[in-house]
Amino acid sequence: MSIFFYCLAYAAVIAFVAIAAMRIMGYLKKPQHLRWELYPVAHESAERVEYGGSYLEKVDWWKDKYHSSIVGALKGFLEEALFLKATWEHNRPLWWRTYPFHVGLYLLLGGMGMTVLAAFGKMAGFEGFVIFCTCVTVFCNVVGFGGVLFGAVGLIQRRLCDAGLRKYTSNEHFFNLGLFGVYALLGLVLCLGYSAWDFALMGNAFIYGMLTFTAMDVAPLYALYLLIGFFMFFWVPYSFLGHLFMKYFTWHDIRWGDEPFISSNKLQNQLANNLNLPVSWRASHIKGDGVKTWAQIATEKQD
Image (cartoon, rainbow, N blue to C red; front, side, top):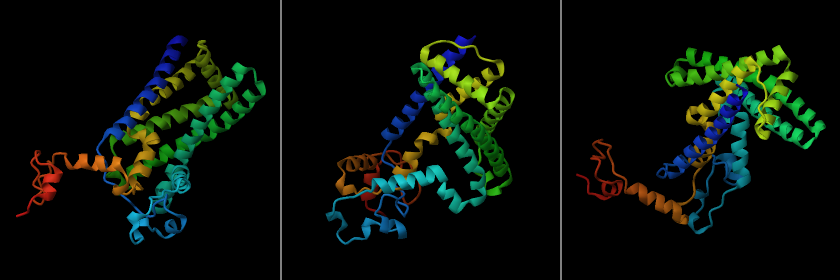
């Protein structure tokens, strides 16, 4: 039976990487998106970010070389990823629920990473390093499970009770939150039932078995925990939760994309391709018939 769980574990990891890669490649192959260019743009110069300015303010801006601040872009991205800055500024009641949920997820991911490092440490014979990693894992697990459970319950309550948010809530939202809530609750039960230290050691042993291709015995309740975790590896990249790794594209690339058309051959080719796409929008000012292209509609004489 233990071999079955290890086969599932390998399949889950492979599926996560494969589905995530497919989604990223699918995004990159799509036609050039319409850019938001919402200001302030994080990769602008610091003085312009402060008041929401743009390089387009400069006279003859196209004569200067386009400049993008990597430090500014990283700072803006991390502020949103680590602190959910936009939610704090625009929806404070939601922030109090979603922030513990996200921090809990970050801690659980960190705990998973430390578990992998502990397995490598065990393989190398560094017992002191294994103990250190296990201590960090214990903290990440307990606080992480607590944050995810609190956040999941709070977000379900918010989506049920907030009339505005309810309009944009699908059954998948409830399923995803419920799935993470059950996963976190089971993790806390295991931490209390076996002690948080023993639970962390179970994780160390299981990952060590994966890396050394040595099947370890799995306790029944821990087996259920693993099954839910394996399902999440399959489900997360496929579902709405895929924004975990798509955030760069949907936040940085679309929201702050302001590279000039005239300085990028790649962008010129992408936009030229967009103009040659057929238009099926039948609004009276467009009159798309599914055959004419955007270029034809934009250049034809209007009645």
